[in-house]
Structure formats: structure tokens, C-alpha cells
Image (cartoon, rainbow, N blue to C red):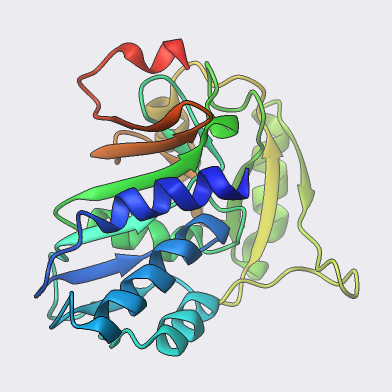
Length: 235
């Protein structure tokens, strides 16, 4: 699947033009795009690029790749946002947040004129929640309230842990992540609104109607889908 991710990421970079201000997501797929943008800057094929990273790991990678960084303040809207996704449904709604950067990712997506999501074909589902839990970023002070809220919704969850030392995973914003098992999500927009209702939930990983272009790496080649198309169900 890594080769499929890379092919899709390279296709996304074709949309990057000199002079653009970019938003950069977090994760293994967008890593390939960041490295390619850096390479094109070094060869002079791209010039006058600046970017806002969605996480400290992306910030480090962008700097290492030679991409100048900027801040979001005063630079809204960004020209283009490039990111991956954990799960995509047939209507191009997303679950994101496997890397823990969901709040900043959603801010950057909402701050951009155009949003490109890059995935391999394994990430496509008939419904969100078929394959992936919904990450929810939770303020530690409100964790108890959020636990009760999620339970009352009829969902189960696990608090995300660091794999290295089994301590609580902490986001770059200083918060917890609860991975909520929803099962198939019939109405992502409705769940989005409902999760936003609970104090203590900073943000969540349901991204409804925030994709302008989906680029999929498949065994048959790279496919590009816009929301108006209906052929995603054939994947």
C-alpha cells in the first residue's frame, strides 16, 4: 500500500503552483507530498512557497525538506490544503485523526480555498465507521463529562495510549484522544453537530463535506474524484 500512497501523493503535488500558501496535514501519506514539494523547491521547479503545518511532526518534516513555514494568522485563506484520511465514504466525507492532529487539520481545511485528500484504496468504505473509530480530542478537565456524554449516545470508546510507555496520548494542544466506536455512520453531518454540542470536546475526526478533490492510489492507477461524481462506489 505504501507505493499506492506515494503515487497518490505525487498526483496531489501536481496541483501545487509557485506562490502558493499551503496547509500541510499529518501522516504517512502526506509525508510523500511534503518531501516532493521540498525536492521541487530545491530544483527551482517551485518557488515562493510557504506552508502552515498541522502538527509538530509535520513542522519538523517540512523544515527538514526545505519548505518555508508561516503562521495561519494573516494568511487566511490558504490556497491549498493537502492531507490524508483514515476512512472515506462514497460521498467523500472523512474520518481523520489517526495521527492525533485532527483539530489543527480541521482548522487548516476550513481555512483553505481548496482541499485535496490523498488515500490508497483500502481507505474507502460504504459508510464512515465501517473500518475506523472516530477520534475525539478532549480537554482533560472535561474528560469525565465527555465519557458520560459518549456513553449516553450508546457508543463505546477507548482512551488513546502512547505505544512506547502506555501512558495517555497527549495531542500537540495538550489534550486527550478518545477513539469512539460508532459503527456505520448514517449521517456524518448530524454526528458532527451532535459531538460539537458537548462541552469538553475540543474537536472530533468527522470531516463532513470538506473535500474538494479525492485522489486514490489503486492497483489500476491513480484516480481523482470530485464530490459531484458518483463513480466512487465502483472502487
